[in-house]
Length: 418
Image 1 (cartoon, rainbow, N blue to C red):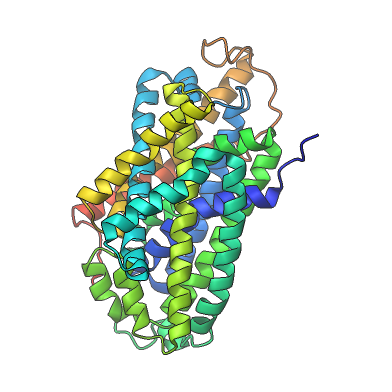
Image 2: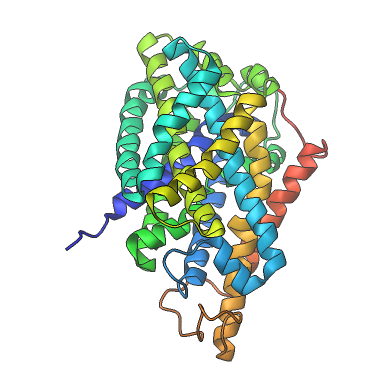
């Protein structure tokens, strides 16, 4: 008899999907909003994104465990919405994998003494193998990586945390008194920092039970939120707000951020631990995001769950972002900012629409969509919290976040330059 997967393992997968983008993107994106408003922004985002993930579980429960966005959205919302949603899912997953591959190359080139391009290639070949193998393999490596991050976090970030200067943490000596306006431009990066939703179907298939998947999602987002708090407090308490200028000017690239952080760290051991932690954060997110994109594309292309079928899925998942990384490397924060705008479609808007349509069909006692796979709507075994108001809140949060990204892109929102 197979042992049921642990909630901790699933939580670590969800947390690992989140933390790469958040750990390396949030400090630069939140430099304008600084400590209190950054904490508010990521807490609000975590709550909304957890509920929207539960909404996906509610909509998915009528379907076979192997289905993903493609099947469910097409059935319930139609071909046009599904096509747009698919493009956004792949765009976000691809651009995040692209950002992680590029950042890994920048960090590993010094560790291995090779070019960043070769380092990126080796990174993909070695660590994408876990995704190709199975979700169970991703579970195992995710738990190890989270433990590894905690250890490097303790040795590295605790060194920073012990030296937190409250006047720096709360910018008491800064001339700036307005922080809230900068939080608007931070929201797209905050949303990406909890963008695990392409892994919801993987969690559901892994556990075979929506309630266990719900607990794993909540556990994962709480782990990520706790790590974000400690990370931001440690960085904002040591690196003055005025010194973020060079980091922001160079697109928030991970090597620039770590270099700036290194200038305020006296201990070489702490500096090495911070670099190790950053690498582990990128690796964990690369594997977690890779799993979500892998399962999504397997469903989209109807590739079989065989050795050769998984090779095909591996190719369409990892080769395009690797090629783009080698040809067009650019800023980490820029990449996840665009990802955040696009992710609002399938992390907020589509989950809300799916649940709205399913509940309307339930109330009328008719089939959801007209596809045989759905059968006749039945009373929900699992239901996300909240009624119409919660659906409107989740959808509105997504629309506002996307709007903030485009307003920021055109220079119509306050922009912090350091």
